[in-house]
Image (tube, rainbow, N blue to C red; front, side, top):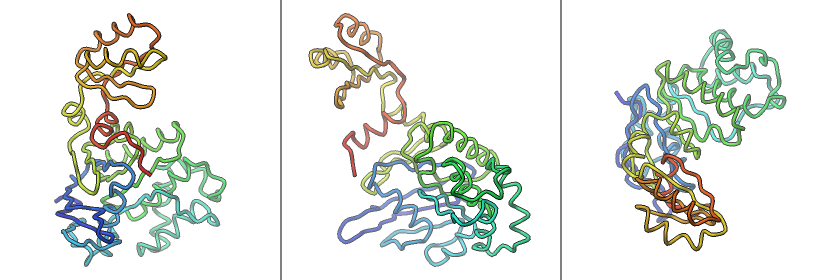
Length: 302
């Protein structure tokens, strides 16, 4: 049975639908990505899925429980990694885990028995007695992940878990998530890092204006929506070359001082750039970020 099923989910604030007739089903033992621009409805969807707010319409089943009626029982089997750390700064690493175990009704003995494995998993075995303010940003995020596992959850919901981390810390966090997937855990991940989603997710749903506008594996989304090659063109002579670029490519998009050329034949594009002079370019394969920008637009949302 699917760990999470949403059917026709709708949530309005006033007359504005934030989640609009949204349906989603998460496969067990997989990492499912929920992507969307700011204000698309991602966080509201997660709050609905956890029974923290009530939907105006639709059906929610979380680990077989009907929400919101059985939300408390369902949440006992779920782990959550929120956007912002909510660690207690007055407690040590070990004490944070002990305190969290009580929220799930675990005895002190049960919690203490689980802590060594969680610290090893998070790479924090030598930080058990360290206070939270002494930890790096990456350590705090890994502790938050370890804390979400204290109840041995079947489903782990991660809301932008690597925001603010440097590349090394992000890669270490990804290693932890891959281990959870290998262990058969189900992950629901929201992120603004397209490379993160492409690396970790088996399936992705792109949400905008409260609706899912595309869903498939990362590779299938790229193949379906984007030409295989992208040539990013920039330089002082760009304005004079835009017309040529549009004539050579299936599709072009200009963002600021860069022209994005989407094409099946990149050689024709790069040779034309070389002949023009005064231009520079980056030739790369299409990726998930190209899909995201095509479907949701390049305009900044705040």
